[in-house]
Length: 319
Image 1 (cartoon, one colour):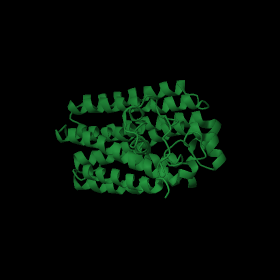
Image 2 (cartoon, rainbow, N blue to C red):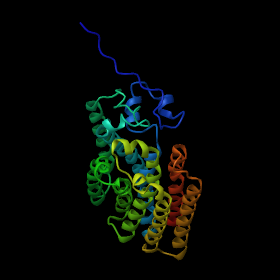
Image 3 (cartoon, rainbow, N blue to C red):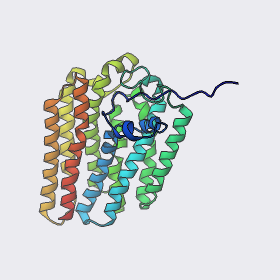
Image 4 (cartoon, rainbow, N blue to C red):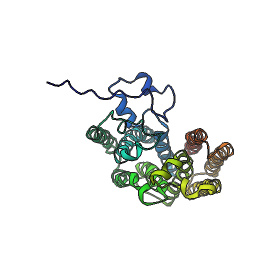
């Protein structure tokens, strides 16, 4: 008779997780590998998925007024962002398990380090997606259909870096879908302004995820993984400035394309874009693309940049 095989002990911390994060400090030991699969110890991705949702519902409310229902849209999008980011990251780790084992920053993740099996990860992914579906089904039909359609992008994204130098575009398509979905949850339709806001979010993702990808460019080159960081190489800073500028132009056009009750709403919205852009310029002035710590810090700083714009749009919606 053999002894029951024990699951490998979880490392004290995943390499790129913030120190003293709540998962490592407070979560039960058996739950830690699953929460790490969901990146619950690295909440920046949840924020970057959630913020376009806030933009979308605020922009829709700027057009026809704030409603109490918008509070539920904002809250439920936060719940959905946490769950779907977790499901998406779990799927990403399943598909990337061989790559992750070859990269210093990712080999401590639960699957390559042996803490979770692929079968266990698939079950965990399904649980998160099913709970997220309960949230989605509280919306109108158009928003529900948009949410279901987004699954195509979630499935495709992990494979994008295998066949295109622009996987950040695919990530942008997926991560900013919430802007259109939340807009539709409020308005029951999708206008040109929502599409322009979605495009602005994609450009923003190109900006911040190119910064993020610079952390792994040497390992990615060794294992053949593509990214915009590797594509632009020494031209990285001009490319980042271009993505920054495109983000601001498209966000401004989204506000201009929104019918509003008064001029002050438009001016406040455009001021929000200016403040959002100022923060991104601040990041660029401090960014060293050859320093992984600098790249990670400036990548994380985009939470604050996105929330600045969300705050201005929300205030404008109340005017």
